[in-house]
Figure: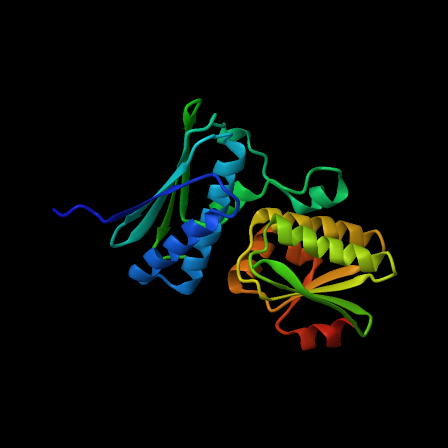
Amino acid sequence: MSKKPTVELKLPILKNMELVATQTADVVSKHMDLSEEKSGEISMALIEACINAFEHSESKSEIYIHFLIDDDNLTIKVIDKGKGFDSSNVKIPNIETKLTTSEKKRGWGIMLIKELMDSVDFESDHTGTTLTMTKKKNTK
Amino acid sequence: MNSVTNVEQKDNVLIITTEGYLNKDLGEEIQRAAQEHMKKGANKVLINLERSNIVNSIGASILIELIEELQEVDGVLAFCNLATIIEKTFKIMGLTKYCESYSTQEEALKSMS
């Protein structure tokens, strides 16, 4: 049985570097013949995953992105070596609350990733976080 | 290049046109352009995103601040020419509950003015 093709990226923590990941995602999406809609959703989720890794992990080094190409789905892993976080403690944002209180307007990343992808999973401890997200080729 | 490329007033509507990635920097540039005209009384703001086809949640969050600022002066924020993924992102975040989205600038001006 042949090994599934994988694309791996290593991104330095520099401004707008998440766009490098979206360009790679576009190429992978085209290779898989995903629709433009799905391709856009993957890019948006990837932007948010990268920003979270850049900003919230307090990682001082690079982040790693693996695209695992399968016949029926695309799995993307975004890996950082930061301090980790507890995804169950992340508050679900609500625009009404944000507009009627002094609550910060930010904090949408995880919600967007969950809405845009078919499955999302976090593995995190004090040595870092791996976000695994999947887009199915033929559903949604 | 991510920037505000044009700011103009037409039929009492302030039109802010952008190009490139709607990130924190561009969000703040839009906000500054709007605030400058709001000081002079503008309260209807239309953002034309025809040449911005990618966004992040930080840029979008700054637009939520702008909605809040416009609400304080009985104003409105609207968008036109949204890319499909930006429209979907704004919908997930709830911006579309507070802002109309129009297919074209002309359609927006007809409705807003």
